[in-house]
Length: 170
Image (cartoon, rainbow, N blue to C red; front, top):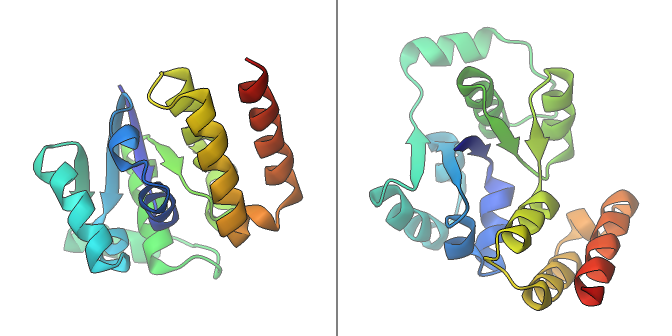
């Protein structure tokens, strides 16, 4: 089973798009950090707590030693403490990093950490039959319409359009 470390923007998108049960239905071992968990609204935390209680989500609380190690690493200024914590844990677990945040993805690439975002998650959901192609089109279209990260990124729009065409034609 593939280990993934997820940042807040992924959880927010998954919850907003009402994909939470499907996301946790993927054959992934999903991790995050307490810092990321604390960044979410209480309602979002409550949704995720159910998955944590069922051992579908592991929330890492950094030890004092890990915090010292984290602080000693040179991170770009663009990364928040929460972002730094997921990069740190992904590196430590040799895991895939799930983020749609450009600075996080850029650092992951630099550190040779495999990374993916929401488009990859959609690919996985459709490929594994957790989301029909019709639902995939509706949800990915909604994501682009409601999220500036996608709406204002030409490369992501091209990737989304590829999926919409493929899923509508098959």
